[in-house]
Image (tube, rainbow, N blue to C red):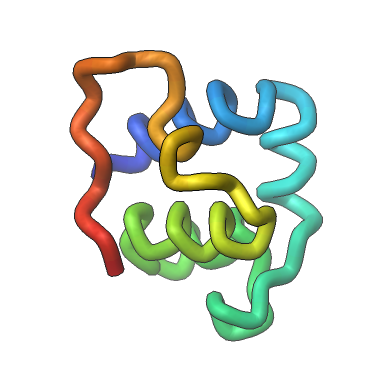
Length: 77
């Protein structure tokens, strides 16, 4: 998963406003007590960040991949 794909999924799954706010403010223990933005900036793989965010927000697997039915899901952790 590329950064561009990651941010596209954030916007699709959480909404552009809430998703970006969530990424800036939500501290996740699975990411070493960093926010989503800090983790991406620190070089954590977007796939790992995506799974940590979805796990923390209890996003069901069926809803994690946005609106594109042809999009391949990032491999599991």
